[in-house]
Image 1 (cartoon, rainbow, N blue to C red):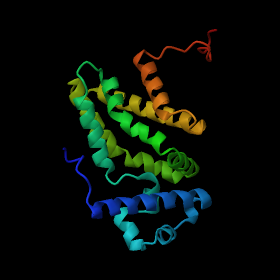
Image 2 (cartoon, rainbow, N blue to C red):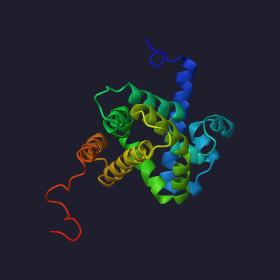
Image 3 (cartoon, rainbow, N blue to C red):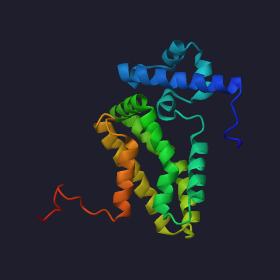
Image 4 (cartoon, rainbow, N blue to C red):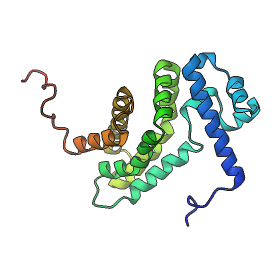
Length: 214
């Protein structure tokens, strides 16, 4: 049994439950009132904890919306490790997709929470800015893993370009999933996007024509 598979103790389980409760309440209140009209005291009060306890889990009410995971940096390292451990016959794009897929699947498993979270973020430009700023550390970790996976120099453009491509896949797939109200599984949209890019992004038949051509 690995360290990740070790059963959590009662104290750790309660901490995770409290964190999840704070996240759900923050999302619900922000969806109902708008985040500007929600305070940390509002969230803590509904959760039955003090504001001080809230700040043991989150630095701000915005983080309760954007950072549902207890250790997002650790999660990113786990994705990087899975990418590096992927079968050698997989190209870097496929290895990255395989490593990310469990994370993508969470959107389907927690559908309503993620749909509501995205709607809150889309209505609040400040959250969007904070979201992009929070991804700088994620980028560094995954680009480093892509450097190792490809055997290229850290100064080479390709690992950073591939990171952006994969990020674009995630962003475009998630946006379409949100527009469809989660009626199609995000994993299906993600897989289809990866397949398209891996095939060189041919224009699908029956869709909009290439500009200037019929």
